[in-house]
Length: 116
Image (cartoon, rainbow, N blue to C red; front, side, top):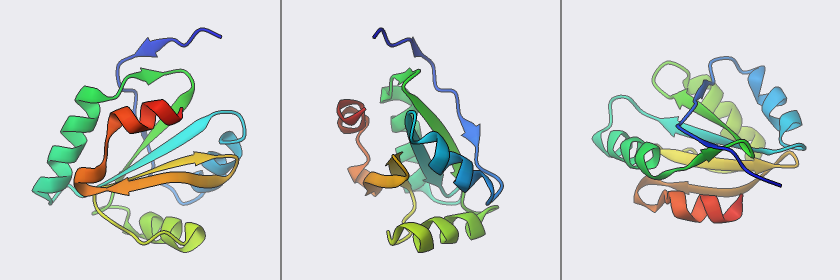
C-alpha cells in the first residue's frame, strides 16, 4: 500500500457529536486529536513543532481542538477515555480506543509516525 504524504490538513473538532464519528472512523484508519490552548505558550510551541515535524498522510485524520472555546469537548474526551486532560495533548485513536497519548514536551511526531 502506498501512502500519500501531504501538508497538515486539520479538521476542526467543534462539536461533541464528532467524537462518535471519530470513534467509528478509527475502525478504518487512525484518528488523532491535538488539544491546544490558545492562551498557553507551551501549547503554542508544541503545536508549531508538531506541524513542522509531522508528515501528514492518508492513513490518518487529524483533529484540532481549541480548548479555550471547546473545553466541554475536552472534558468529554477525558471522561470517555479515562485519560486526564492535559494541554497541549495528543491522543491517537484506533479501533475506538486511545492507543497512545502524550502531552507537553513529550509530544513527538516521530513516535506517532512509527505507530501509524
